[in-house]
Image (tube, rainbow, N blue to C red):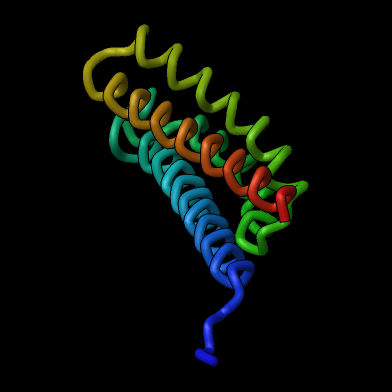
Length: 129
């Protein structure tokens, strides 16, 4: 007559832990991508000395931030499509720009892929629930 917990409690616990990891990864990679876009075009390697208007490319990334923070599945879906544009920009600038900008472009590609992967992981986990 031991007090063993049912197996579904263990499975639910594992499921919620996976969703938390996916959510944390998506929030972290999205905020890091926003910070990279702003710092890249203002201080690290701007197109023109003193910063450029390209810093405005970070504005579309602010749109899904609230929905991602609140864990809304629909926001994860369309934000993954939005971040694909930043992946493409990173690939193009990684191959065409010079040394400091190319390194930042490769970092942008890594962050975009991390967000897309975590977003897919989160949506698939949420739909399995």
